[in-house]
Length: 97
Image (cartoon, rainbow, N blue to C red; front, side):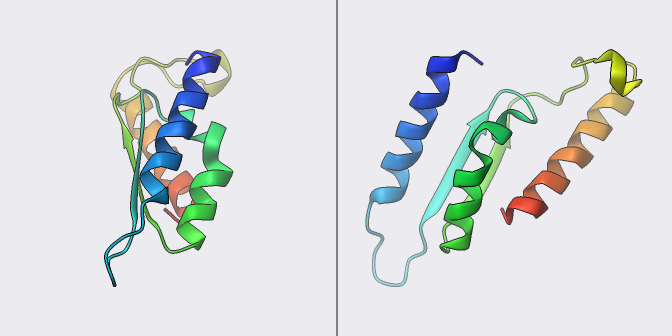
């Protein structure tokens, strides 16, 4: 992710969450990223909105089956995609989203 794209995401998110919802209608935020773990850049913001009662959803465009790192010792493929999905699930639980 290019550094400038992070700011565009923050601006879009701010725009999505500043509208006043109808009476009794909860606010919803959808954060979309290319890769699992990209959400870590704005994790504090996502967590804050969740604590404030905003329904926060996270969409990841790839399954992570090709994101190999030597230190992970997981070869590319299904096992890596499953490990990344489990990590993302844990991150969402920790953030309250």
